Image (cartoon, rainbow, N blue to C red; front, side):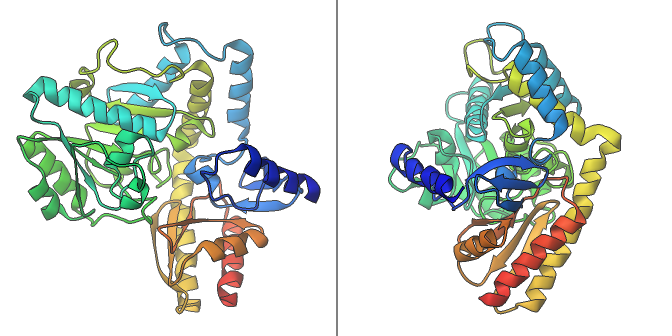
Length: 402
């Protein structure tokens, strides 16, 4: 088995472009909150495909939905009506602020669609001059050019300039800075993550999004929320905007939406969605029967039994947060702070966390390092107290050795 693992590592270096700093794990199968490598080693997965596997690995309802649909119809063009696409759109609309949905393949693609929709709507409503989009410093919206230009982190821009024009960046959580940056004559939209997940799980001030909504309403700018990572129950609500007492005009989804298969979505109100007309936007694979079958199974599972999983996420998130706080008390020289909501949690360290991630792998725990010194924990929503206890015990052992 070791030889097989080494062969995968070697052939990855030989045949794949070197775009990922891969860790020494080669998963072969997964069930629930655990995966097993080709060497049969077991890992407790608190990365979850980077917040993708909201129901865990190979959830039976998702697997059966994919199997049945794969036997019936895998792909058909959006030139025709797709039954599963309509069903998934209805589920999303009936459980959100939105009236209409557009399906694509990823979070970056969803944000590209949202950028186009915001500009097209504003051009029709206000003319050519109102095209700027205000985003936040430390944000992350994707790797394609529009989404990358919207991303407020220069480290992701390096080597790819010039970025696309028409984006303005302000500090996240600073309503006064946002108010100064928004121009009624130029700003067509404000694009924000409810929580800056890739930026280190940075939370907004309590009344921030109410102020953002007011600024947008006053200036005629659309409020676009990037819920690629925070959506689909990750925070204990189906969508994170529900925590803040506001509604956006446009919202983007991906990651957890398909329960593990690649799908993204742009949701919008009727007022805004009417700007997209036949030929103005498209995605060949967007919302095909197979991925929508998986999406339907995922959202139905999240909502069944009186939203049991969402309530479970809140309880497990509170427990995980409490136990992470315990690590700060136990190892104050290594752990600085903890923050997050639901099962999107972070432990900020006093040093780079990449070595900690590797030590955790050696002990059978997968965690993620973001913003250089922040451990990000995103277990599936089905995680149990015993899983959290095991993860905390491993983290404690690793911090003790630092």
